[in-house]
Length: 440
Image (cartoon, rainbow, N blue to C red; front, side):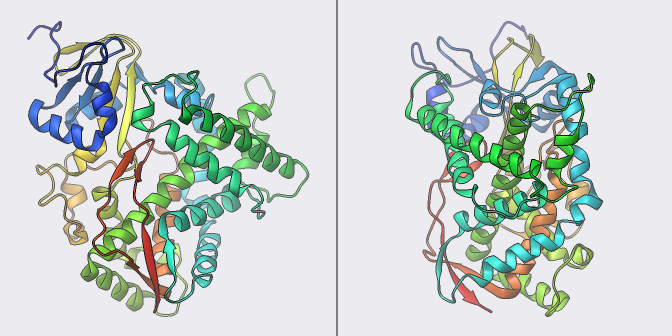
């Protein structure tokens, strides 16, 4: 096979190629193109750079693990999260990771457990029996509150509105259909982002200032970053600190909130699974407050979490660009090309999962995770850039789900609701997901 050939792929239009079509509905087209064209799909970029859709776990391993240093994160990450762990590369990224990781060590994560449970109970107590709630908004409010209190050490909610608006604007800017436009172009998404980003910068600066005035708790991620010194002995500048916190804030609450949202959606669609989860929670906890020590007994809860993150994984795709010409599956791919690695395709692959679109927590009962080949299940990514906050996210899910289940059930207001998704940095629902609260 000549390395000068392109992999198979859909025909494109003059000038624009196939990329705009892909941007309209990545979830649909990547499934269709993977079935038609195989492990590596060429997406014609027209006059812009071409893209490539990677659909096999073996190629995921090559790009994300074996040849990781030949690739970099795309420009969108660098525009939205400049000079942060989400966008930096090489030695700079390693230094940032080493600074941040201690905040996510198991013993440190366990110290956030009481706060997580208290925040969840407070939310549930604010709901009336029979109330209809926007569950995505509620879960985002909850995980934002937990992140700010635990990681930043502040109890004030003054900056929450600006943070919420900015996260929405980040999602809009990073949506697949908007990524073809550079940041300097005055599109609606870019203008909204710039306005919201200014407000977010001010909000984070206010949080930093509050800590400097002694208003925050010690031994948090924020104090660790504020006290860290670079090789030259200087502390991190406020600009760098702000950008780091923004990246961690987005990653630290948006993805967990969506995991919870999709879990409640799937449980409502499958009442027998919800009943099994409630039975385990009742039998294991009774009236006790859940803690990390209960995790080994809450096996069905763990399987619900795994299955939810398989069927509707918030981190739907990973993006890379080659730093240099690379060879993938026998084809040469030029420097700067867009590489799409859709986790959803792996998680829905019939090679690894029977009836992959069925929500079936029981499939994990007999050691499925150990039996799966490498990289067939990667809800937190793979390779050196695997999610730093994985332990924190898992802790939240293991505590929030039982705490909420003890107090109430959530039923879809529209039981016929089927979700449509927008591909941004996360897989976001286009639908409002309204749920009815029923006290238990």
